[in-house]
Image (cartoon, rainbow, N blue to C red; front, side):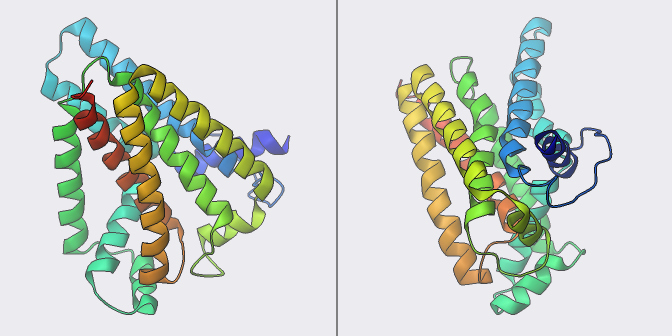
Length: 253
């Protein structure tokens, strides 16, 4: 029952998909982050269905790319993009780590966040126009990989604060079980990418691991540790970086 409740809480927290009401108690949140990659599977599956719809209806490249760009935001409710925007605002302040953590909690959106989101969406749209049918299975895997790594960080790394969403999730998690599950899912998903397109699969996996190392250093130096906003920022940056790697490395195949 705890596993089912954890699944419901994960989707209620990290997606806009309607879910039953479940008490957010520690037992119910024990495996919450282990279910996080399943949301990525839903995002990837919807992207595949959108592609098939476009093929069936003979929809052009630009509109198809727009769907691939917007669908993740619609399904997740923009929660990870919100974290990305907050981190951009805080980082652009060039303030102390304490002040940056305060900016992360500020509900107002600054100019740098708007610039960052605009640039992100333009880059994602442009890259999505270059996706071909042979690269589509790898694109479907992107949101799964980003959430596997994010879930691993949530139950493994030190938080910047003893309060907040990151601390709540981390303290409630059954760390060993979550780490084992997301590790298996990551390896299987990476293997699928390698089978479908070795060059692009290797490139995308390498980029994801490089960005994992980057967010570790960046979060420690700039904020004194991880937070929910930084996890959201990582999901967005990782997905954009992997998409770029797939598109460019796919040309080598």
